[in-house]
Image 1 (spheres, rainbow, N blue to C red):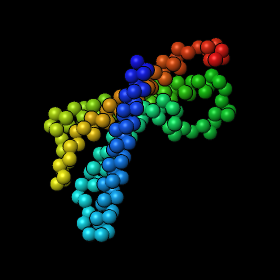
Image 2: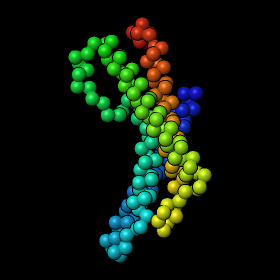
Image 3: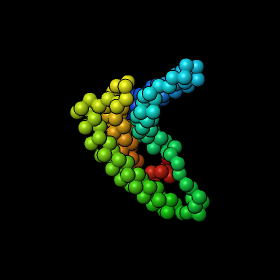
Image 4: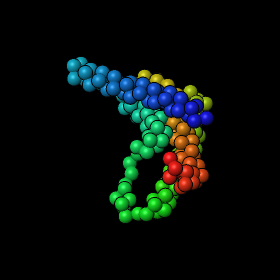
Length: 164
């Protein structure tokens, strides 16, 4: 199961990288066309917003797995081991609650988008539904990561940690 999640995360990061690359290309083309020809792309804002949201959620799980998210550790040096463990557990529970609620909302939104094969409202007509589907997939991976971290925190005994 862990290998499947890692492979899925790598695929999600590849899609994320592709989305960022598309945003860079569209941004560069828009700037060049605007400065040279005086014509700006009409769809750049909606495209960039859609791709950016997808990129954030697709990259969420590996960031959570690596503990690379923003953390405030101002009081860590004053806390004992039990307090650190309790705050880590509480943080994981809060993260699971919030990301779980966001994931639920994203799935509802994505299903509606897929049902109508949603496209952008501007003149380009690029499909939005695949990118709206990428958001809950990435968020669901993050929920799975959080569940795994929570299980590890609950079921890993301190004596096992010391022996490693």
